[in-house]
Image (cartoon, rainbow, N blue to C red; front, side, top):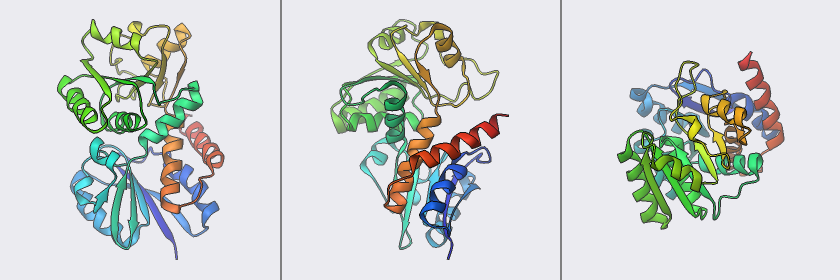
Length: 281
């Protein structure tokens, strides 16, 4: 009998996850399959009810990482604090939510910069779903300081308060338009994570003036494309990386949660890079 997994989102046709996950799942069980499913927000309830009967697990991408939570039977502490779920396991018709975004980003930073999250100082540019999950994960891993910079200051402050309350981490906030505080935060941070969606489209402006990046920082952009931030880093020889490794490692962790076996990371990496190269042509 086919063992089915899926990734849902709106849109979803661009997802590289099926290529990566199928490479791993076919090695685990030839009868396993991972597909992309286009699900709109008003279809979430129906999808989750079908998932109870038809799926062994599924991933969630934008815009459903928070919206799916009311339809689940349980979630991890990190997912609860972040208000974000990207991995759901189906067991005996019950749905259990977790978040692997933070784990994926931590592994990506270690690969790109040999950066260690415990005792680290990390800045987040944008406080959307992925930033929520990663900031909470980094706090749980013992980060020394977090700097949250967002277009809407109230969103950053709300996340900061939750992290302080749950983990006691030192968290600082400012608006992306605050040209006094933002450069000061970037100078104090060791790594900056670009988490906004700006850069997905060629005409997108940067989330802030890239000239404000200090030469001492390392920059990780969660977008795969050459964004304005990445272009500035390359121009000034600031160490930088795109979001492909984060996608790889969060997916590998999802695989391990579902199958309870070690993920074939290098096999998944090869499949992901091939799919990315094909999509970039």
